[in-house]
Image 1 (cartoon, protein in one colour):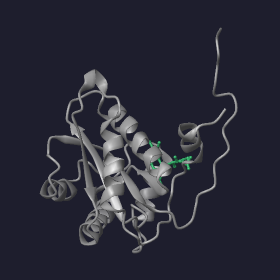
Image 2 (tube, protein in one colour):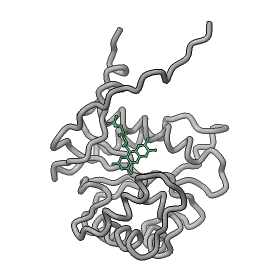
Image 3 (tube, helix red, strand yellow):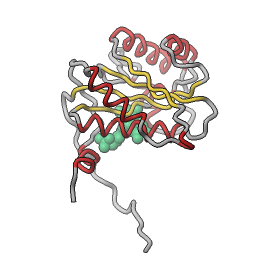
Image 4 (spheres, helix red, strand yellow):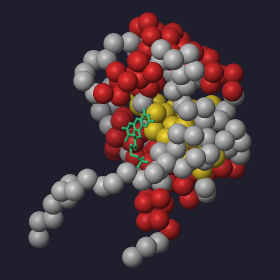
Length: 194
Ligand SMILES: Cc1cc2nc3c(=O)[nH]c(=O)nc-3n(C[C@H](O)[C@H](O)[C@H](O)COP(=O)(O)O)c2cc1C
């Protein structure tokens, strides 16, 4: 059994190499529209999606993220990617959004228990919509880990993201330069009780 939705679900991969070509206004509208049609707890729809396409803003954000990891961030648990991100930031060529031409930041009101769940569902909608129109995406956690970093919050506030929002995640978006291979599915992750 296959159909366009199932194809998009299976063919979507996390893209980490993008071309320089910018996402068009029409494409960006499709992605953001898909995001806001996701389900949300109690139909809250209290999310905000901030799309950044200006290279100088993205580079400034990258500089702040790099400095945040280098000088202010300490992993608060053993999740390996946090330590990896801190180490990766030592490289002066570090770029947390893989030089994607568009970064979409997903935030939500502070104190809302479903913030991350709503964000994840909205971003998966966005990822699948991107796949369906030939664009690549990648979930990016760095801004979430650094959401309490003061210089970053200061800059995000300048970009219109309210200080009382939690930063749930972000998404790199662009045209695919090099496709990622599909990881194998791990066995024994499904139980069916009939
Ligand atoms: C909650 C979550 C956080 C993730 N964070 C990152 C990230 O910060 N950087 C990154 O390159 N990929 C990130 N990913 C992408 C995963 O590494 C990727 O989904 C996984 O390796 C499977 O590959 P696929 O998406 O191509 O199927 C994240 C995915 C999820 C669901």
